[in-house]
Image (cartoon, rainbow, N blue to C red; front, side, top):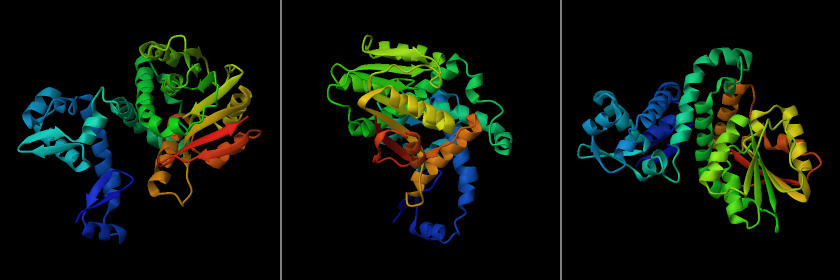
Length: 351
């Protein structure tokens, strides 16, 4: 009977014999890690961009039909589609390909759980990883990747992070205790603003403010209008390391920001975030945190890869929960809030 195992590269179904060989160190996993998963991931991103999965939106299609829709050569496309059946995104029946429920949920534009924009952003990472040698030698890039960003690069980044937030919200927001009678929420580095939008919708009388770079806030303003939250969510443009934070906040979010800053910058940003709170107000920090060896392999692996990518992209890194707790210094009741997602930590600190 096949067994489902998760390697750091992708999910595969291994037979019992293969599982035993893997445990005995006789299944050459480096081949998968350095060849199979790398090539599949690269082609996967191209296939998403070229509309391979979109062509299956309305039902099963032949190889020729998918080839015509995507403009990809039939022979190459067949190899990719067959590998996508192994990955669980596609099924093959009587010479036709169709999306599985997972493929339909993750890989179609407009799906509530779509990751299309995020995968598109990953494709830009693939291109920048061509300079890994130099960054690995120096331990930092020649310049941060966003120094070269144009308007469309920022748009892709913001919508990619929105894809990720849309997935995380059902796990995160139910575990966030917004104080009774709260009127103000500050979202530092809030980008797409989705966390703020959802909180404002759920809490009557709550007003939100999103801070981010000027190149980002023009997109945030578009999204505020799209969500019809004018008057309830405002936007402040500026460098979050320097811009003054509005005071008297009931809640402050610092989500997926810490990993982009140095320890010294984090200490200052967190101190100012706590100072922006009312007495008894709460700071929530969401981050991909380094885990100890007692955690699952996946929980340890994902933050390590996030940290490595950050180091090579902007000279930053991932941190442990204990480090973040130290930066909260004078805060009361710093604690980690358990969430059922590997490698992701939600933390709370009270002023």
